[in-house]
Length: 207
Image (cartoon, rainbow, N blue to C red):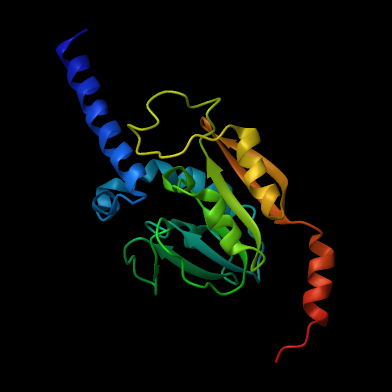
């Protein structure tokens, strides 16, 4: 192995070790996500794919909003709310998804673009959003396509595609469709019996 290869291997070892510590503590990498250079422009194409699911005249909250690129892709009639572990401006809801969660408003969509790999308890998060969020748009690097260096990337969980789908289905969401972005998948989940849900919500009086 070349010197460059050895240095890279050692670097990955350190990153993996730090990730395992965070996983044990159930904490987030605040230092990493506070740096603008951690928000890669190459991720914008993934955000663009997600934006294509979002209809006009709807409300969306984006977790891990980063550079707020999603806002530039969606229709101007969409009410956009950013949320992140640090303040990104635009009235960001500052929230660490690995800690106790606040009560969110109701939204048509919740977006997770390159976020759920860093969450220690994904089922807890999805349960917290149900049924206030009608649809969830989420990318995920499933184990089948991304076996190597998961901890070096900072990822703290390891879902197969089937296991990932089960997390949402167990809560009350169903898969509407999915697309591929590089070696990752982009999922569109919708609340079960969506039409019935809309009718019941309309008939429920607001007090």
